[in-house]
Image 1: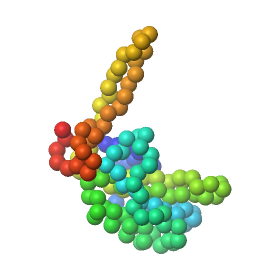
Image 2: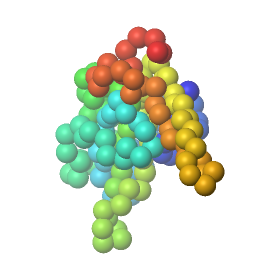
Image 3: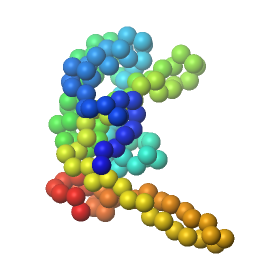
Image 4: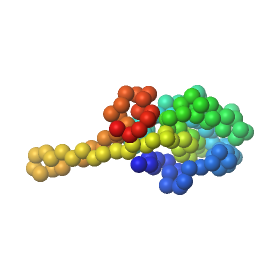
Length: 143
């Protein structure tokens, strides 16, 4: 199952050249970029681990692409995303966010249904990746 979060999530994977083009677009608009990674891409997990600090002073896309590639080397089986921030509204807002790497195996989610009082039904989403300990969630085959 493919996780769909952020811009371009329904498109095929972006190539490195396409990622560099998006970085150039963000920097051209004055949006600083940051790189984040996680092995828990649950939709409510909005705070991923940061790879370094946001790159407020970069104007060349090559610097951002370099940091993406360093994060890929350090975490080859994690989700990695790029965020671009727009401060023109007087506060830091996310203007662009997209996944630049996925693990080889994306096991997906299941829905757990629970019936409660008064015939109410609650549904919870459970990622199969959480059945394994952190750091080992995407190694090997699906459970």
